[in-house]
Image 1 (cartoon, one colour):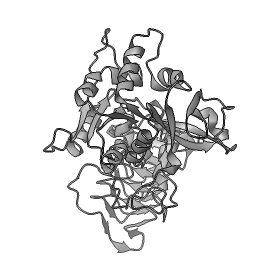
Image 2 (image 1 turned 45 degrees about the horizontal axis):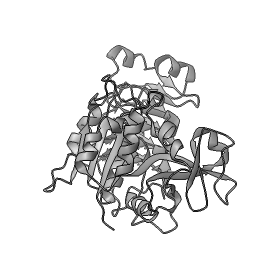
Image 3 (image 1 turned 135 degrees about the vertical axis):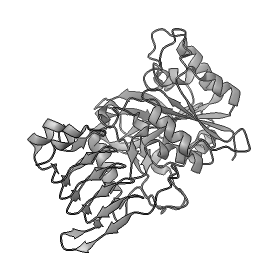
Image 4 (image 1 turned 60 degrees about the horizontal axis):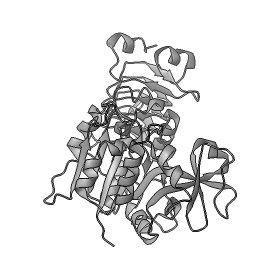
Length: 417
């Protein structure tokens, strides 16, 4: 079934829990998996699903994101229905404010929906790592003759307090929303799990326009889909939950578990990167039928040099991106971005190294995230002395060390032992 679908990606979040990786960039622009940005996953889902009309609504610290979109995603098609266009905040509200919530973000750009005149509008977040055949969710929406469809993912009941939980009937009708309630109703027939909202929605266009106008006229609203609009619809209209566990990706095994990760914290971001190193990773980046698209970088291949005792360039159980050179250094169980240099005698373990970092001779790095452009001097030691790490870097409760990019020469020299 081919119907006109307009995609809108909400990519304006601050991502405060990912600080300092979001100090100078929006969360959707944070690098992931060696060569990608977080936003590449939702955009790839749209394009792979045959949805080629996509607006990306940006807001906070958007320069890095806008540059990435311009380099990799603003393709020019022969048809006006083929585009990925970033839309900076227009401040079209009466008091000329930034977006006050997810619904307000759409309302301030309501002209884009009206001009496109699609049958349905797919409104998705831009800050999760996942693969999803959105066409299947659209088909479910049409089959149910729904006005609104909300993507839902099963999670253990013990995690209900961390999510917005959807209460449903056996046929998928949404009966209620329960925000971070540990006693939220479980899934029909499954007392161990609840349906958590993924923050991804399909709206019939006429319904969306009516709801947005009504919400904008309500001075007591937070102007947010999850907090204001959807709870009022539950039990009163044709609103359904789409069970994400039924989603299937071409090129994957029939019994493959759909992959979705909320990388909202540094530890979650780190673990999602580490997932990619598995022999059979849950997120398969090598599926040619469902590629994860990004900017086409003109990088040379990765290179490993020297084969001498204590000076052997090698990587074990790791991802090494284009343009990187392991010049006598060793990388284990790590994800290494583009253009990274690991010099002789250096050891990198269980770490995420972003683009253009330079790791000096004999330096040791363990359980760390290095932001872009970090220069680690010779003999530096990171991830071995928690007290010392906290003096110079951000350290999470689990002991994960995050080294900010663009450090000054004095600061970087102080890292050496």
